[in-house]
Image 1: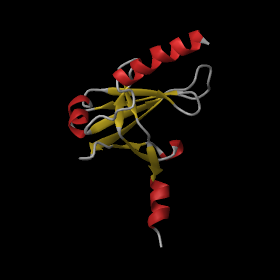
Image 2: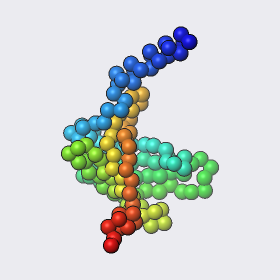
Image 3: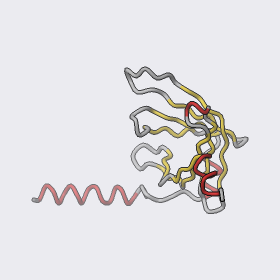
Image 4: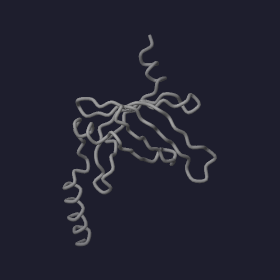
Length: 135
């Protein structure tokens, strides 16, 4: 029992000291994001990365999982930051890869790695936007 309590005493201060869940402000994002690349693992296990450029453009890359028959792909796109600190990204994939993909999220720095991470992504696609605006 003492070992378990000591473990909690060690973990809790570290996570709160680094502000693991604290979202970055709009001004922090505008300063940090140009020239940065965000990496994550997609739901199918394959890696994805997005490189953010100072002119507001992006390069999105998806790569296959190990031993997959799929190829790597690149999509252009663009990004913006709202005054509330939400990053919105439009990825312009070819139609055979699902077409345009739009998502928005606040960003945080991972406490352990220091890498940028989405807090919670809200995703949409061109097709779902068209469905929601059609009469």
